[in-house]
Amino acid sequence: MSVTTHGLLEHYLPRYTFAHRYKTVVRCGDIGRVYDIARDVDLSRSRVIVLLFRLRGLPCDRWRARAFCAAMHWTELAQRRPAEFLVAYWRGGDGNRIRRIEDAAQFCGALPGATQKAGFTFRFRQIDAKRVEIDTETRVLCIGARNRLSFLGYWLMIKPFSGLVRKEILRLIRLEAES
Image (cartoon, rainbow, N blue to C red; front, side, top):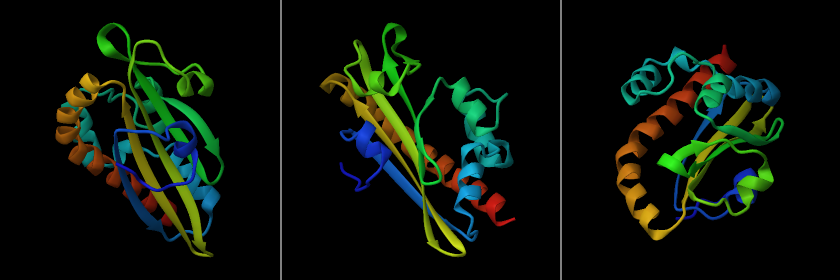
């Protein structure tokens, strides 16, 4: 599968097994403001996100985006303000748990025992003086044929819900930026 982009994901996760992508346009001409809102959007403002996160057993005591990412052991791997930021994690080792990324070099290198690398980015593009496009993409690299096969079932089940969460995040950003 290939999704054409030129940005942080191309640098940090150019090869991947699964991906999905969503976009929206915000009627706000201040790209820096839209970027800042996206970095720490309040996820609790969406009933859909709250419901899905609770059903999944995710940490529901931290609803701001940065605090939620920290609770999930996701790392902000890179940013290019106001154009893009990238959050990533890797999975492996005992119990195949999500592991903290020490630095970008570690993520890009061979991670002993890694079964999966994942990244998701938010990109921002000034369309004109009054509009900003936001594009979010998720990529997952499964390491090894057995891991690809086992993740496939999970991906088919979770992708619609993950997509719904991404669309809700975009909606929340749009609402706040346009207010």
